[in-house]
Image (cartoon, rainbow, N blue to C red; front, top):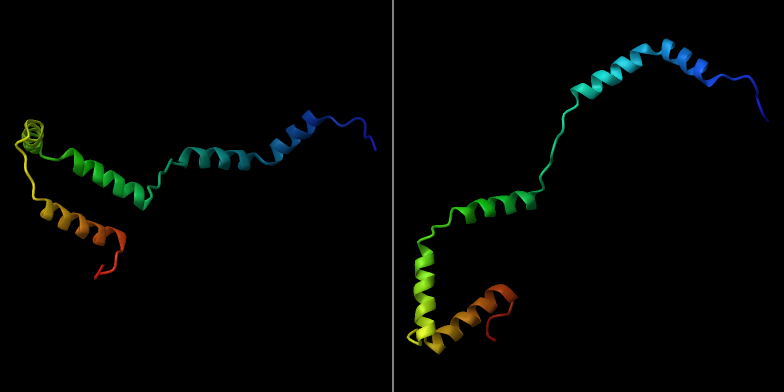
Length: 101
């Protein structure tokens, strides 16, 4: 079915005149709206860790350099038993390996 003679501009103008408050309310709502940002708990934890990492004492770098030099020169020695004990303990703590194995 086709209806002739409908002027959509005229209808829009009539609608706009009968609903002027709605436009004003929309404008007020748009200007009063503020952007918000929600940070997930994981992102907050990452941010905390980054801030903590930025505060790390750089004097530890001297110790790292000292150890690196002693390893390169062959002067660094470590007990294989002590290393094995620490590796086993690390695996138990981090891999849910039952005691007694």
